[in-house]
Every structure is written in structure tokens, then in C-alpha cells.
Length: 396
Image: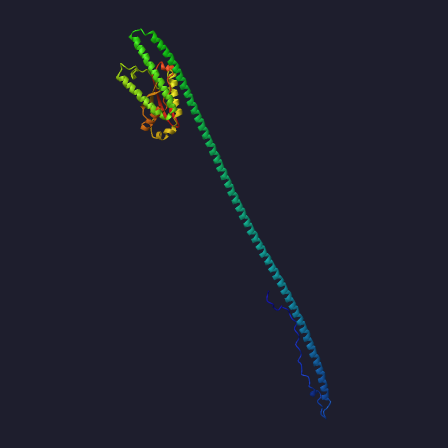
């Protein structure tokens, strides 16, 4: 509030009061006139009294004027006080209005601050909700992706298992087909051998009385019969070897040793042996895939399929990882399906790979007896193939 100040008001100014004479005292007024004085002093006293009355009247008028002036001054002061009070009240009202306005502004500012805090809190909560929603969505996407990965792995595993079952079924069907073909060829060979035996026996009876050449021919026929008997024995041994696969290699080795011993014995005693020597064996060659003899081509294809379908690349995968060239191998097979020899026309350059090829060829023997058409022509067939090792074993 502003300090209280005296208002600027032009107050009335009273005129100057006339000079006042002191009134005569009673002693003066009633002083007896000495005897002998004239009445002139009495008149003078009367005048003095009149003059005193006038002076008193003037004094009263002056006092009245002073009173009125003081009254007017008091009223002016009261009016000034009222005006000052009104001014103070107006100032108080304005101060109260300003205080109220200030309070309203402060309240509005506080409300705005509260609303801003609430808005910021809402934004923070909304951001947190969005973050949680994003995290939940990411988690759901990750779970979905993992589920898809598991489903894909399951599908691939099922596909691999199905492929493995189909491959095993194909291999089993091929083995059964090969076994059936071998059995059919063996049956045909036995029938042909029986027929030939009957023919030989008939020829032997008819030529019993013929010359030494006929006896030699009969001796050859006897040798052939002995060879057929050995083939039958070898077939029985092969049947036993099929039942005991773990002993197959040892049995084949023993058989090859026995045959080598027989050849050595035959070469040392040519006059007493009925077996033909190696030089006298009828040999056929197939160095490619084309040959006028369809039976020879089919037999070579059957041999290649047996190796390709029964031997997987996994058995020699680590070995063939070594740097090597494609080996060219010639396999000589006898009429009974046994292996005479394995010759490397071109070595792989890695002894372990060459040895693995020898073991593979020996492990799949016998390869089935020659069909009758080949038996009449050959005792041994030499089949040459290039061995390729990539995703499988292939003979080209």
C-alpha cells in the first residue's frame, strides 16, 4: 500500500483579524468621577463602552469566522481523509485483485505444470507400453522364427529319413534283383552243365573205341567235368560265405591261394594235370561300354552296379579326400564269378586308395557265374573301368 499523504486541497484563508484592544477593567469602568470634573469624561466613557461592545462583537464575529473556518477546514480534512480512505480502499481492492490475479496465475501455472507433468507421465507410460509391446512382438517373432526353424529342421530330418529309407529300399531291391539274377544264371548254368554233361557222356560212350585223339578229348571232357564239380563246390562255398559275410574275405583269399597252388602244380606237372593253364584259358576283353556281344556288356554292367549299389562313399570318404587322379582298373573275372586278378592300368597315385579299390572288388566277389552264352566263349573276362569318387562310387 502507498504511504498515506495529505491531499493537495486549497484550504480557505481567513482575513486578518482587526486589532483587539484590551477591555477596560471594572475598576476603570466604575472609577468615580471626581467632583468638579465635567460630563465630557462621562461621554468618553460611554463611547469607550460602545467601542468595547463593538470590539467584543467584532471579536465574536472573528471567533465565529475562525470557528466556521476551522469547521470548514475540519470538513475539508474529513473529506481528504475520506478520499484517502477511498484511495486506500481502492488500493487495497486493487492489491487484492492483483493478489487474486497473481494467485490465479500461480494456480494456472501450477495447473499447467501439473498437466505437463501428467502429459509427460502419460507419454512416458505410453512409451513404456510401446516398448513392452515392441519387446512382446519381438519375442513373439523370435518364438515364431524358432518354431519355423524347428519345423523346417523336422521336415528336413523327415526328408532325410525318407530318402535314407528309399535308398535302403532301392539298394535292398537291387541286391535282391542281383541275387535273383545270380540265382537264375546259376540255375541256367547248372541246367546247361547237366545238359552238357549228358552230351559229353553220350559222346564218351560213342567214342570209347576211337583213337588216342578221342581219348584225349574224353580226358578234356573229364577235366571239364572236374572243373564243373569244382564250380559247384565253389558255389556251395559262396552260399556259405553269403551266410557268413564276415568270413567272406578270408574264404576268398583261401580260395585264391588254393587256385594259385593248383595252377603252380599244374604248371610244374603239365603231363599229369587235367586243368588248363592260364595261357590256355579263353579270355574276353571289355575295355569300354560297347561290344558286339550283348551278354558281355550286360555282365560288365551287372558287375559295376553291384559295386556302386553295395559300397557307399562313406566307407572311404576320408581316404579319397587326398589329392589323386581317377584310377583306371582292369578286373579279371572267371566263369564261376570269382576274381582272378586286379590290375591298375592308371594308379590313383595314393596307395591307400588303390588298396581300398582292391578290397572293394574282393568284398563283392563272387559276381555270378557266366551265362551259358559267355561260358561257351570265355573262361575269363577282363573288364576295364575308370573309378570316380565324388558323391558316390561310380565306374565309368
